[in-house]
Image (cartoon, rainbow, N blue to C red; front, top):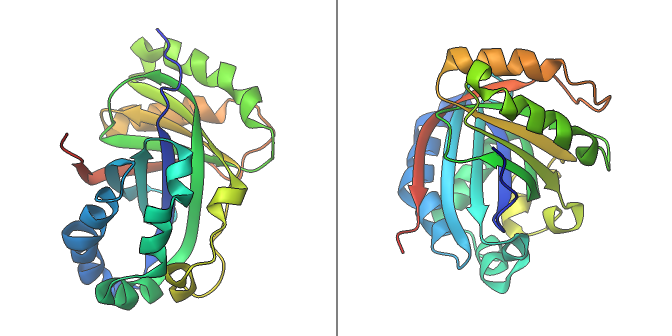
Length: 221
């Protein structure tokens, strides 16, 4: 069974944080930052994950109505006017990768409690791995992959020099695309990561990373 991308796109954020401030970092995300982001028209849901076998330690991503939301006046207004709490937290971010992504392949449904994330560099390489990702999902009876996606970065939309970005000190890193596999357990994610390593795209930035869900938040229609 396959499904095409359904018009929802992605904002993906990978980062570490200063360990001395990790507890407040989590409070800020849950109490202020996610609700604030989901108040922006076009933001639909947010998902926060923590590393099982991954680097950086944290991975946060959002479904948006479409990628244009990520340069809309409402969103840019927020990036230009960070809250006092955001101004305190942003300098604690480390090793930041932030990408506005088009969801160009989407097989299955639901959100996995464990993710395999394969971050890829190489412009134009995503199309060459779509078929391989489809084949992985078709073998889901063996691998327990419940959803398989390809996210492709739009560099123009991703690079935003805003007051919020400046607080992090230095440019955010970019990747060209990511393969994201949703799995129900750490064990099934490890198996899926092993299968993913066998894809010969010639574009891997690094080995697949495993993340486990911390919490989610969605807009209630």
